[in-house]
Length: 397
Image 1 (cartoon, rainbow, N blue to C red):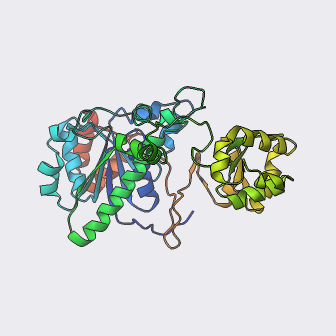
Image 2: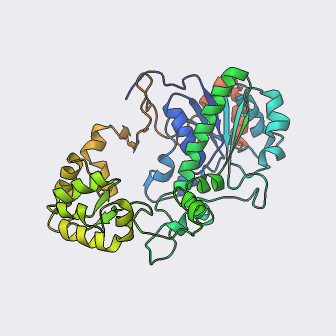
Image 3: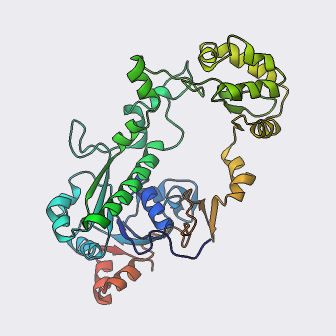
């Protein structure tokens, strides 16, 4: 762990978001030094219950995207709760939320009407399912539903199987990354103009943006892309192949690499075979190519073969489990695992030479920092207790 200040030190973020896309974004901001106050309803972010597994009463799903944040439990549906939010926004640089469109407006906190006149430097990031308008505007969005509607499932799965969900919440996570990029762009522009702005990030837009190379291929050919399993639609061999142990994934991107692969497997003549002489030919003869390669790979154990092929300049890798990754020597060398007491997480992949990410605190228990945040705001302790008794706030006993 590095104890220095991060690249975003001094940035103050109010995080009203829940579940994954917004929290994934704000954790990245927090890792790089921003002060992030995560506001949850008194019942908590619903992902606290998305288990097992649990750490005490909190699901690891929640734990995975909420480190380095202060935790405030506050009922924003009540006037007294929103009064505290207004005070927090007086010092905030960024507001992140993923309410259904119109929620903030009903609370008297619409960006254009209410927030911008009062806080002209505030950057507001709204993460929604489909945006605020259009045929689907205002509807809630969920990762798997967007995967289906944005065409991602249609190109995922085995060639002779049905459309399949990608095995991780890719739309939510990419939405979080796009929200992060939007916030950083708005902060850079604010340095020139002195003004904040609102950022519209929709899961649907982010899902459609992931359709490379399938959309370009469709634009160029007019043919509806089909599922191809692990195979690449434009490149061969670019697929998983059986070995004597676990599968190996070959990602051969040019003829030179294919010649190296063939030579290493003891069959240099493959590179001169008219069926395999270039990528277009290999793509036209995929079944024959796969059969020839798997016959050559069959005697080999995957891990030593993968090491040797990579050393020879052939892009490839073993198909590993999550457990394999956690103990992989390179993952350990890259310090990709973070531990803070009983907390374990994935390190930031963004590595800055002078101002690296830091890991300062585990994800907050519900309302862990309620009293500390309100003390910092100068809220009278007697009023704090009244709000706690009324259920507007929640704090540990």
